[in-house]
Length: 201
Image 1 (cartoon, one colour):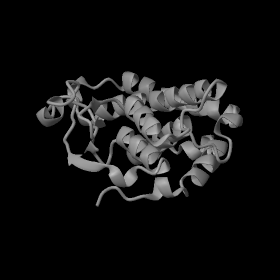
Image 2: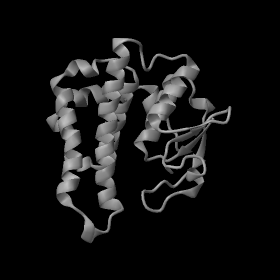
Image 3: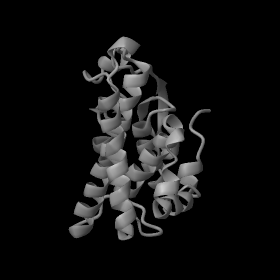
Image 4: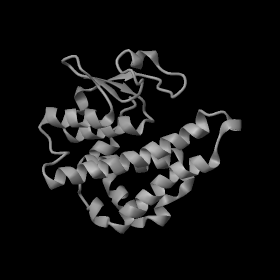
């Protein structure tokens, strides 16, 4: 399998953590990419018309995107249980949607900073995108059962990737001070081998 890769993409990280948890990490070859919302990477577009990472090229010739589809494919390929069944599946998928929603807002705020010309930037819009993270983390803080210790599924992986991206791009927000239960969960999750793996080499 081959994956269009960016070391700073939280959605790529989500796929790689899932692959590692499923024992598939060593089967993925990285393809260099330069996904950008304005200067679009034509190499990716040739396989994925959205021009986004992650895009996975399977051994049997499929091009899969986005991270939700790729993670479910990897789970099925490995006979894994990251998505669960019955009520557990709906819980995992809903938590994944929450984590991905935090990321969607953070990425839009990042693009406002890094891709939009300064005279066109809208600070209130940026703040509104980042507030999605605030309200979501407040929800998780108020419902600690959603991030029970040892919970490993597609939902917990998505939330962990969202927190990683907040640290990467918005480290000055100091979310840990406001959401200590979430911070403790993340500190524990961050000790997992799948999280600590180095994919940059």
